[in-house]
Each structure stands twice: as C-alpha cells, then as structure tokens.
Image 1 (tube, rainbow, N blue to C red):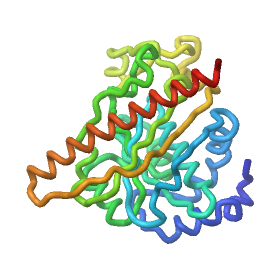
Image 2: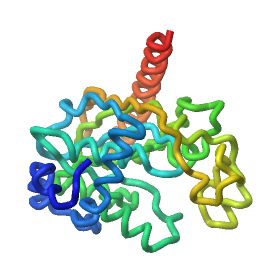
Image 3: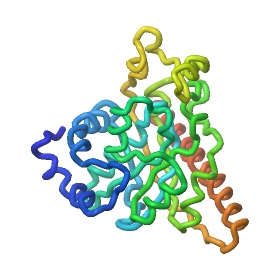
Image 4: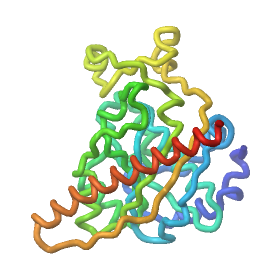
Length: 275
C-alpha cells in the first residue's frame, strides 16, 4: 500500500498522463491521492481483484468500456480506475459515466467527480471522447443495481442509448465482465417505498440490514473478483441517422451477449477450480 508521500513516484506514469489530459468535470488528482490507500486495499487485499485484458485498450485516443454493474455502490468502476492507475507501461485515466442525480450529499458528489465520475448525458460522453478519454459505462442502469442475489450475473437489458455517442463518434467499444461484485454485496431484496422516500434509485436489503444502519448496511464481503476486458467490437458507421440507430441497437445487443457469455465462462471456470 502506498503512502501519500510516494504517490507521485509509484504512479508516475498515471500522474503524468493525468496532468496532460483535459478534464472539465471536476477530476482532482489530489483527491485521488488521498483515496489511493483505500482503493489499493480493496483492490489488492479485500477483493484481490484479478484483471486481464488491459492490453487491448489503446495507448491513446478515446475508448468506451462497457461492463456489468453489481451493486448500488459504483465499485466496479472504482476498481477499473485503480487497475488503470496502477498499470505499468501505459497508465491511463478513466472517466466513468453514471447516473448521479440520486446523490444528495454534495460532499459525496464532489468526491465521485474528483475520482472521475461524470453525470451521464450524450453531450458529456461526446466531450470526453473528443478529449481522448477512456470512458466506462454500466448500461444495466438502475435495474441492475437492486438485482436480487438469486439473479446474480443475469444481465438486465442494456440501455442502447448509452452506446449512441460512441457509435456516432466511431469510438471503439470494449466489453468487460466482472464476477465477484454480485456476491461481495448480496442483495436479498429492495424496499421500493423507502427508496422513493429517500429519493434513491434503490434501497437494497443486504445481510447487514437491519443490523447495521444505512450506508453501513452496504458493507462488502471479501469475495475475490475477476475482471475481464475483451477485444474491441468492430463496426462500421453509416451516414444516415436510421443506420446509426440500427447499428447502436445492434452493438448494445451484441455487447450484452458477449459480456453474459464471458460471465458464464468465468463462473464455470470457478466451479471447476473449486472441485
């Protein structure tokens, strides 16, 4: 784990890349530095994240990473952020497009934006692509956040509109599958009326609720994670608006299928290793 005094030395490539990159959405390297020990602990020691496929990502220029979610807390995005930050020989900053309207705490909102989270909108996505950012999104949306434990790793239908800016700008799309996140914070159910009362997208019932108060009830179990970034999806952009919409829907459907297939493969692989 890294002390703050050695941050610039340990993550030299990441710091240099971040200093050169334009980010108009509140990204703050000082906040990343302060939170690095916690991200490092979660990545290396609590979830022991095993990630492969980073070599598929471009060394420069925009890219869209599309993944499955797993919980109300945006942990897959944070683990991807740390993985790219700690990567040797080509560290790159990642911006995470997410629905952030439900975040009522201004302090939490500032922390998330400082880490690289950006409120989802087509305009924000295009600004990030134009600035050459790697962008991550989790298009299961709110339906995937309160997914019950009995339906873990069964993807909800992807929101195809999350792919539209990438298709319009001809940005390469990289599927990413993560197992471990659904089990690290198992959701037993959802209290809809309480979520509405608190103006939240979901209020999940976890094994720690009601024994621990919210948000401590979102405490995570030390389940090992496996994250797999797959090769880019190839597509050709057509000129007409109708063709772009059709291509976007196709990319959303195919990407969802690739991620689900890889999730199934990783789960089978884990069962075989456990025998």
